[in-house]
Image (cartoon, rainbow, N blue to C red; front, side, top):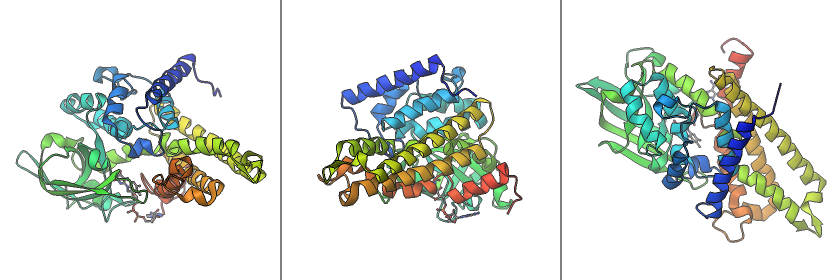
Length: 390
Ligand SMILES: Cc1cc2nc3c(=O)[nH]c(=O)nc-3n(C[C@H](O)[C@H](O)[C@H](O)COP(=O)(O)OP(=O)(O)OC[C@H]3O[C@@H](n4cnc5c(N)ncnc54)[C@H](O)[C@@H]3O)c2cc1C
């Protein structure tokens, strides 16, 4: 077992760091927690696109770089370390582009992939509905075939992309008579179409990064269907492995981790540095242990992908572990900061720019989004431990 990166990989990491340091030096954005999912900057996304860092793993014939998933983890790890505002391209880069490559037609690849690569298509993720979350196959949004396309009616909720997305990836029922897993299809649709209403969801942190999306007799051409009609559920399962498996599940709050360590070194309480308090030292050391284990989980997932396998239980295990780390980090930060630590970013007295309460509140959702921790444990029990279906 060799944990070393190659020289080329180390050079790539330094190149990404250099780019992000320069962005910060120019004051183009502020590092923040959850920036990969909550901070939308079309300008930043265009600059990342110009570097060729969207679609890093996609084949060169479709404009990608044909590089490894380990390279992609290095890239995303650095983006997260710096809290860079990457939400415009994150979802399409992570999973929708891959889905189009795997299941899309040649026309769809030629039409959509260049837009993603140029940082122009911001794709929201429309799977969950009011009555369909963990049991996604219960979804009711329907796409009725007729004429030269489909008519979509229904509602999605918690759609990442919020009011910023210009495309929505959605799953809808195309055969109401079939058993529930067998009558679902995948679509990708422009959000500007008549009949689509996007209502931002203001979450517990005050962010508008999600939305309720309503479809009222929305006519879409047949070319919006991704892959095989009625096989959508099986296509999604594969895509979810990619959604769950990234470094963002471990490092969404890295700016807080970094900041709380600095804070304990720089802050004195009752004349003594916080960094000399045994309890605080142990709490931070424990977090570091968990962080390192989480990082290994994520690199293992990337290795599995580089071997051409779908990271199924590996992704489930990595996400369940890592989101627990993020929640633990937020709790420790709140404890160390004390009462002032509850102040949000709007307050001039908020320590660490209010990152701790943001993470404390925001991280509650981490073990729900992209599959709850209970569902992930079900996957590990079934696929890794080979326990019988419950
Ligand atoms: C911050 C946030 C962002 C999100 N982003 C998106 C997004 O971009 N796109 C999207 O489509 N959706 C998104 N979601 C929705 C998310 O995928 C669902 O919340 C999640 O799948 C759970 O579904 P539910 O909320 O309906 O809860 P339910 O499925 O009703 O579950 C309720 C509880 O029961 C447990 N449970 C359910 N079934 C089982 C079972 N079989 N075994 C054991 N326990 C079970 C669950 O773990 C949970 O604790 C987001 C959610 C949040 C909170």
